[in-house]
Amino acid sequence: MLGFGYRAVPAAPFPYDSEVSLHTCVLLALALQQGPAGAPATPAAGSETSIVSLVARAPATSKIVLLILALFSAISWGVILYKMWQFQRAQRQSTSFLDIFRRSSKFSEVQAVCKTLAESPLVGIFQAGYAELTAQLKANPSAATAVTRPGEPPPRPTLKSLDALDRALLRASGVEVSRLEKRVTFLATTASITPFIGLFGTVWGIMSAFQGIAASGSANLAVVAPPIADALIATAAGLFAAIPAVYFYNQFTSQVKGFVQAMEDFSLEFLTIAERNFT
Image (cartoon, rainbow, N blue to C red; front, side, top):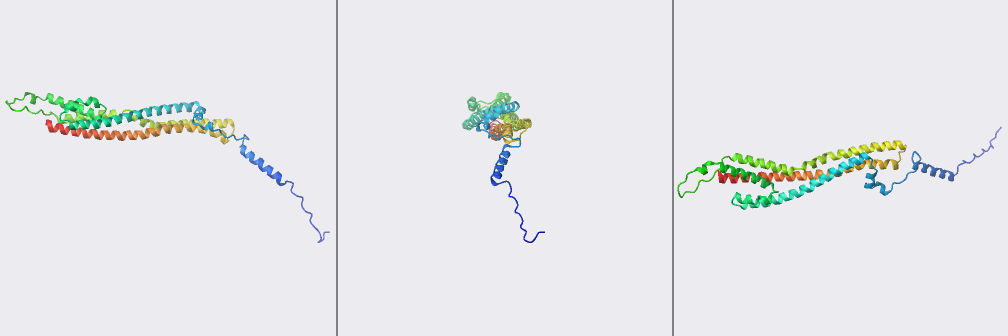
């Protein structure tokens, strides 16, 4: 029978000391770092993420997509440089032509300098109007068959139809606008289609990356990141081709509108002079 003087026996100490616990934590941390499949994570070298290495590692389909985007980009830059050169010459020559046109007293004087200013759209409009004006004056028999008294000045030649002259100027304006807009539509095509081509390459690359991940049986970041980066390079290439095309398409369209306004003003000025002198 136990009495009040009973003393409890102290429990035995826990067998794991602090050194063993620390060793266990270190092992657990290393296991988590190695990933679910136990493969050690190897940091990617700097050269493996460069643009050249990404393109070199890309699958065949992605390389074809990149080649198509490179062709679109090269052609669009050729169009951009050509149109910049063309519009600068057209603007410079249009300024010179207007100065000559407004200082000359005869249309024949202006016609003589048209060959040296052929890049100006105003030259094409003037030549069309001058040809129509000359044809009407030659075809008008009133001035050629009119009988004048001695000492009287010959009658002034008159236009047969001012509307026909207006239509000739309008047709010439359409021709010049088409010449200015030539090849600009390719920039619109590049801007609209290249992002989708790049997106197709990215989707295809991601599909190939997931297939490779499934085959390797590892979802480690070191395994997942390189094929995903290879796939995203197609989207970057598509944007690289599309962004300059969008910018310069809008710029060239604005410049064409300015030329159209200048052609309309010149046509009205030409009609005013023709109506004042030949009607």
